[in-house]
Structure formats: C-alpha cells, structure tokens
Length: 196
Length: 196
DNA sequence: ACTAATTAAACTATATTAGTCGAAAGATGG
DNA sequence: CCATCTTTCGACTAATATAGTTTAATTAGT
Image (cartoon, rainbow over all chains, first blue to last red; front, side, top):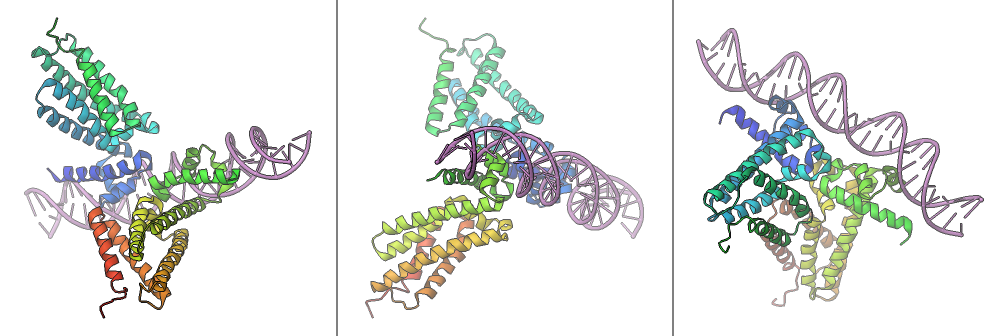
C-alpha cells in the first residue's frame, strides 16, 4: 500500500473511533485529526469535508460487513444454512459496527443526503448477494421460483423492515429466535415440496 | 417528595443519561431539557448553569455509591471482609457510575474547579467511612493502631493512587486479584498478631 | 379569581468549529 | 544540491451552535 493510502486509511480508522463513540454531529474534525496524530488541515488534505470523512468510514465498514458475509456464506453447507447465516451475520454486524447502525437509528442523521447515498450503495451490494443466492438455489432446484429480481427485492425489503423493530428492543435471545423464525417462514414458502 | 424536588430529580436523571454518554463538553443544555421533556429555560429555572447541573449529577451519584458501600459493609461479617468489600464495591461502583469516573479520567475536565469540589466532597464522606471502620476495629482489638486519622488518610491516599493505574488497563480478573492482594498487604501489617 | 410557581418562545452574546490559505518541512529524483 | 512535488501545520475567517437571559404565557394552589 502506498504512503498516501496508508495515511488515508489511518485517518479513516481514527475517524471511525470517534464517530462510533460520539456520532456524526458531536465529532469534530479536530478530534479526528488529533486521534490520528495529525493537524486538522492535514485531514482536509485527504478529505474535502466532514461528510466525506464520514462517508469513507461508512464505506469501509460496509466493506467489512460484506467480507464477513462472504465467509459466513462460504462456510455454510446447505443453501438454507447459507441464507440463515447470511441473515444472522448481517444483523450481528450491523449491530456491532457502530456507524452504519447509528446512521440508521439516529433520526437527525437519517435525513442527511450522504447517509442515504451510502446506504443505497450497501443495499445494492447486498441485493446482488441475495440474487446470487437465490439463483444458485434455483439452479439446484431447491427453490421453486421464477422472478429472482422481484423476490430478492422483496426479501431485502423485509429484512430492512424488521431491522429497526428488532434493533430497538434488542435482547439477544429474542432477537435470534425471531430471526430464525423469519427465515423459516420465508423459506418454507419457497422450498420445493416433494409431497405434492 | 414535593413537586419541585420531583422535577429537579427528573432533570438530574435526564442529565445523567446524557452526561454519561457524551461527557460534559459534548452535552448541551437543550439535549438535557429535551430528554426530560422540558424546555431549555425550564432547566435554567432549576439550575443556574450547566456546571451546576453537572455538579448535581455528580452529587447524586456519590450518594448512590455511599448507599451501596453501606449495604456492602453491613452485609459483611468480619471487619476484614468489611474492608475488602468496601474496596471492591468502591472500585466497581466508580467504574460503573459513569460520571464520577469520567470526571476523574478525562483530563480536560480535571482542571475544572467544580469537579475538584465535587471530588473533595465525596472524599470526605469516604474518609469518615474509613475512620469509622478503623475505629471499630480498634475497639474490638482487631486492629493494632493508634492514630486513626493518619492511617485513614494514608489508606484513602493509597486507594486513590491505585485508582487510575487499575482503571486504565482494566481486566476484571487482574483487577480483582490486585485489589485483593492490596487489601491483604495493607491489613496484614495492621492485624494484631497472636504469634508474638 | 388571585397569586405564585412553572414553562416556553424569542433573543443575544459568546464560543466552537468547519473549512481556507499560504508557508514550511519532507521526500524524490536528476 | 537544486528543483519539484507531496505532505503537514499554524493562523485565520465565516458560519454555526450553544449557554444563558428576558419576557410573556400557562398552570396549580388557595
């Protein structure tokens, strides 16, 4: 990695720490710079604005989530397990990695344009992931579906819809059982039944 | 509890939430008021300044700590257990209750006068507690000591000295064993030895 | 209905902070 | 060792946010 990229990544890490702790509004550019042991104007050398720094952090975190999703899916045997683990990891990671989650929860952030943009980006990646899964299942004749695009979108929409209620009153046991039941409900309507 | 006191306590609770989360500097009077579902100027009706609100919170928390110390000590059998539990609870509570701990840790707060004042108040309460304990032990001929005041002050000084190093690299196991060993070291120099 | 306690809206003076600019300090390469 | 390009930083400004004030309205007690 070249010098420039290294410093930039360093700044992103510093920014991440502060953003996760204090949220967007309460984080100052000076704090981020200090955390990275740089002057404030150095920060502006790498990023045009506070929002751009935040966007970089969110993108970085989205990347991490995607990585973890990939390994979770790759390490699962059956397609249903893949789907189940995908959902479980997705929620766990969104919860853990503070910023994406914060961005979703805090109302005052939600109406900021760049948050929406970052979210859209992540959603697209996710959607492709889901489509690939569904397609795989279709090829293997495990899923009895035609319009993959529509189903993928519906699926993602459902995920996003449960996201908030589940995250708001979070109790790990309740949380996991509910997600599992969601997967069951969703997939047993899709599965090819051999008994008909 | 009269109305005025009730509202005041409510404001203190709201302030506590915000202060614990964001620290003194990053907390705004507006946020506190909003959290208590009041207007900002209502807050100023009950408190003269932001610092006064903070002071009220710190005093409230100090009160809670003292309560817990009392029950911990009362529920201990031997005097050594009383002392040991006193120390363990003290550290646990200072850690848990965010504000007192924050006030100690954050350097930028440390040089504020009112923090020092709050700390002095708490320290006095604590010192009396320790003196009572020592006195008790002396009456019961368990402690072989004369100048209770000096010993109490020395003891408290030691506690405050270990406070920071212990809290900074906090690992619960290490933490507790170290504190226990501290008590042992301290008390086995004080105990009346029967073997001499 | 009167009085005192409480709340809230609108305002101000001050302090913070995002963002700029130009100069200085390092690196790179001939 | 010079010339050029990259990176850092201190000092500055303009915009914004916030502590605290004032005044008027609302509520509760008698």
